[in-house]
Length: 209
Image (cartoon, rainbow, N blue to C red; front, side, top):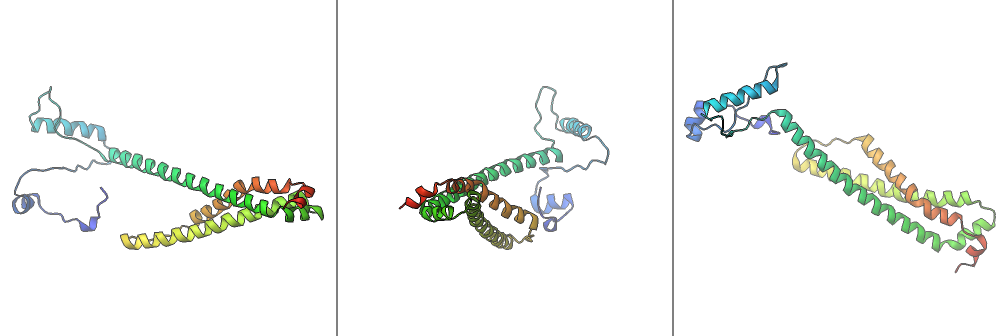
């Protein structure tokens, strides 16, 4: 059940009952099934045996439980899936908030640099040039945030691994994917401000105060 096998002491049952617990009660019995044998058949046989030993009649319910590792694995898998979904939801909300923040910053930048955009368009810059300029700025901004996030996450992971006494492994692929995803967020949320800047009328932009 996830316990460290190095911290387990194996002792004779009679010795534990006589020297330590002072009782003959047994709370759990572990049974190993031979490879290829039917687990369901073994569970059925164990259930019948325990009911016989405990003198449980046919109309009485079991006062024990017979579990196998498949049930435990399914429970752990379900719990892990729920936690993964919760973490994914938190990450999605964080990305949405960060993307909206980038879009707001770029919109403010476009507003403050309207005359600059008008001058560029008036002297021959194409719409795609202005669009590319602001897209690059959005990508750089989000990439810097992604890089800082990866560094902080790695530092926090190293610190947490040191506290828990477990080794820390740096996965280059996952961290690179996170960095590229942050850059993609910059493209997605920076496109609207960049498109707005590229579609400005040069005359109106030059008149802007």
